[in-house]
Length: 321
Image (cartoon, rainbow, N blue to C red; front, top):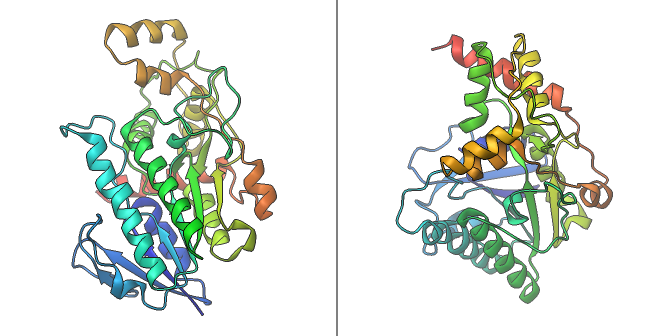
């Protein structure tokens, strides 16, 4: 039986992954936690905050694979004085510290959940991102994830521990939060959205189900060793199409107002919000050919299925309040 150590098990991706791992009869899962509140049905090791000094020794004993989901998450408006320093403390120093201890305890494979932000922010008027692109992060979060990737591959070259990097696009699914959940709420209320003209951009998304399935594939797959994989649902949509799919999943009519895209560009410059406008009107597409061909893997859940599951969970959460 393989022993897997999972960090970040209480997060959006980590909790879904933990639920799947607990169903794998051939896997013994151990999780680490920042708070001394253990899971009732899984071996939980309290380690405190993840940084360059965290002691993972108890959790790492006899471990075959580490799946590192814990991170300082991306924050749209980060008000700390030095965001990059804060990201590096957790995402770089914390990751490398865990990996170095993993080597010491003979871990065979280290799976790191990175971010598409390592590639950049936009593919508008550009080819789709691939796993072989030169990294071009534009914010502190993406920079920290890139530095962690580089440190892991350097460690792998010096040791026998294999490293697998997974860069998800925007992840959605049951219990999703942040902007995706906010947009679901607006669509549910039937509030008209001015997105009808944002129909020529394309965004790659990934359901948490498909992401978790890929992570589990990478635990044992021999060809995953020392590779970087991008992941999506392999079906890209415009902003207008995404809202329409949300409405269908929620069982609501779609109300979209035709506001020309150039109006967004002007407003973005006037209010210094060009980065938000770019995410709304621009494209971010990924090419997952390398992932599919190397691992003989395809996304099992369609975007429509993923949106429906997300909508059902969203509606249930609303009714239980």
